[in-house]
Amino acid sequence: MRLAKATFKATLATVVLAATLLAALTAAGSAQEAGADATWQALKPDVFGERPVVDAGPLMTLTAPVRAEDAAMVPVEIAVALPAGDTRTVQKLTLIVDENPAPVAATFTFGGERRDLTLATRLRVNSYSYVRAVAQLSDGSLQMAQRFVKASGGCSAPAMKDEEAALRNIGQMKLRLVQPGQQGDATQANRFSRVQLMIRHPNYSGLQMDQVTRLYIPAKYVDRIEVKQGDALILSMEGGISLSEDPNLQFSYEPTGQQIHVDAGDTDGRSFEGELKPAG
Image (cartoon, rainbow, N blue to C red; front, side):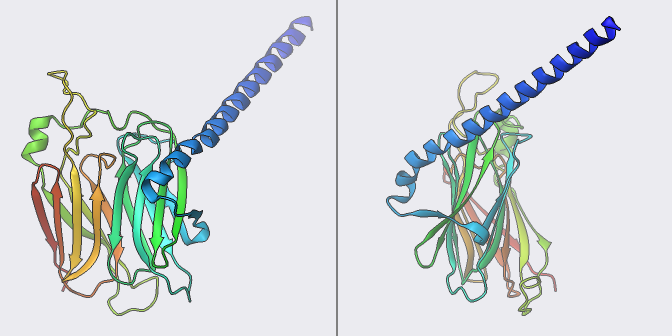
């Protein structure tokens, strides 16, 4: 009987200890997440000046993992949907990783009268950080969605390919339709197509070390992308070191049946081009 009581007390103590540790870790994580917002308060004036940035609420969502499997390739997806009757349009979208050495990952500018859009890509996250998407609407307002992501080391993680192989294939481009839309269909569900754009490029951040020479590899990354449908702009991008190796974009657009053309370039002055001809 005494042995059973002792065993019960030991088990109870273990359970209480585990619960206490879990509560402490949860509290620490919450505190860290709450405290991390201080970086944004210091960063915001540098990016947007004194303009107010407000919570987008239901207008925009940002999807990202709470804990990333690979800090060098963190998937994020942004969806913007202005309600019926809202005459504003989406002009720009800025992706920010607060704690990265270069927080502004990319700024996208959209052509046409865009009231609905989706955009997905992969980011480097260097330490536990908020990832933010800030949309600029045609009335000048800035609408923000955010997500706290637990990841570290993404900006300094070694490239997946050796430098020789990476440079040999640099600029190879693949453009494919992943979701066809119905041309002329006015319903929100069917009128948008979705395209995936992939560009072979090491996107060196300047913080990665050559494993042979032990020297840092100079920054070299895709800094511009322009996608047009015929002569009309779908989107353009100004990118930085926080975009992942082999940049990968998925984006929605309203099809007109015209050919899609991509013009991209990197910080070394290289230019890359690709085309997608609509089916039929």
